[in-house]
Image (cartoon, rainbow, N blue to C red; front, side):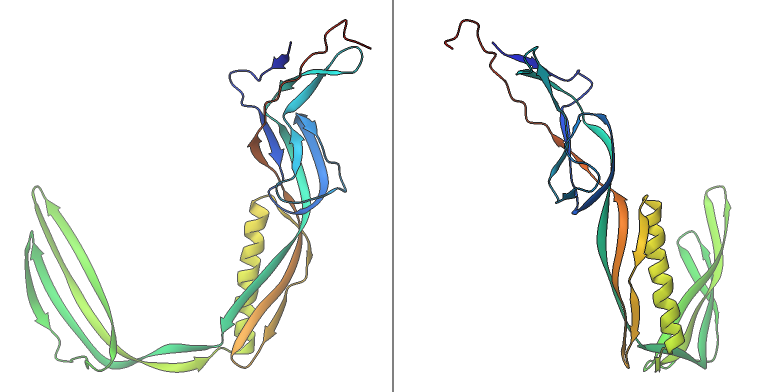
Length: 233
């Protein structure tokens, strides 16, 4: 004979397994059987909390299992690598005095240009383009008027200064840390350093974190045969 006690219809038997490498710092189990304790080192995929609970007889023998949806708060200490590279060289737009503006009036699908400036933009250089629109609607008609413009510019090579690079890399790093904290991650130690070269700047290092760990995995259902009375000694 066998004794198998499944989870309720509202639950699915599941374990909690590690979703990252680290050292367990805290585990609070509400359902299931904890298989690790604070201080234990775990690898991704290791079983942390089992949803299979042993059912014992008076002789402390396993006669079956009760299945649950494992539920626990588990935190592990991990080491997270961080690296961001940034080219110091960039191109800056230098605008010239050449520009072109075209005013128009549009009624439903009919568009009429009402004027163009005399200045023209050289086709050999790049130009910014934009549109300014004012739309008026009356019953089934749509009337709009606006201005289309182009402004000529040339690209000039520039080099970010050391302070600019330091500021930009620091701001990106602080945003990264802020996103971690929003996810409930605690930063214990910051070993990220900024190195600025002639052409390339790098923020690189590691962060020591305490973060939530664990993901659900379906519990394997097993059966245990009960020992029959009268078996040979």
